[in-house]
Length: 307
Ligand SMILES: Cc1cc2nc3c(=O)[nH]c(=O)nc-3n(C[C@H](O)[C@H](O)[C@H](O)COP(=O)(O)OP(=O)(O)OC[C@H]3O[C@@H](n4cnc5c(N)ncnc54)[C@H](O)[C@@H]3O)c2cc1C
Image (tube, rainbow, N blue to C red; front, side):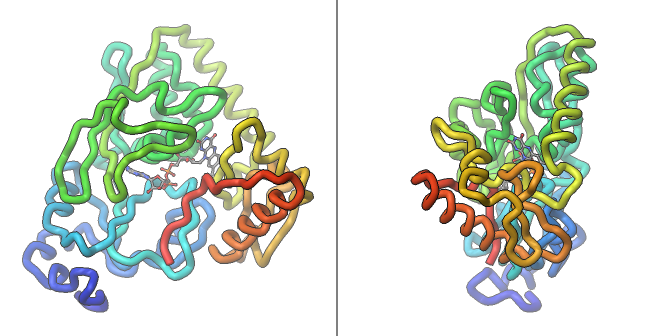
């Protein structure tokens, strides 16, 4: 491959196998356009599979030595400034379908959470309302056990289709996903491609009104129109992360172009020209100040990827 080190499976990128997938691969793709913070370097290769079979066939021939990173819409990510080695996978249109089957909702992992919540609501299914305030994809929600208002993905998911790093397509029952708070035990490099979720019959008007309420509340309490990455730190047992950040005097703290949001101090913001390094440094500074002021060690919720 033009530019890929031997160690990263260079021979593959000159092979006939590679040529089969070439139309869906972009070399040196800028990632700052594809994440909420609008920061970060380039992907050595960006792969947008057509469907599950295409993804499975690609991973099956991709040498083990090539690192694989999966991205949704980048609403919980800091992509580092040095970019990402190997292949970044993004699920496109072929993974955005949503269907309702009785009280179940089946969605491609590239479907937006809000679209899933809306369709469930239109069909009078309750349980999905919390998803209407999370600006990610269903794949990201499964991976992160995304949640809000006392619910999370573990309460909805029945099973999901996953393509493993070696290209095997597996159906995984929810019990095997290993959900805990904002976390799943999915293996590194595994790509969620589809999710089956269970709702309950409810009152359509009440469900739609609740989603409207959630969206309005978000607009007034979170910097949803800023370049941000959602909750930066997990809530430690018995604490709210934002309260600890506030108590440590970090509201409005800034480093370079990165700032702790004045509106919601568990959110970091790119005020315009932040680098990923600014954001990460600011996050580490907040962790240190909170530790010194309260004795509690915050843990990153945002995933930091790349080099
Ligand atoms: C304004 C704002 C508000 C937010 N509010 C909430 C909230 O209330 N609750 C909450 O939980 N989160 C919230 N978030 C964070 C974020 O939206 C969620 O974590 C979301 O689930 C991430 O989805 P994504 O598709 O953007 O994933 P990304 O940010 O692109 O990726 C996040 C992680 O998921 C992995 N991933 C993504 N897609 C897949 C896939 N198909 N298969 C396997 N792994 C995958 C990535 O590798 C990465 O590790 C908020 C973010 C913003 C910007």
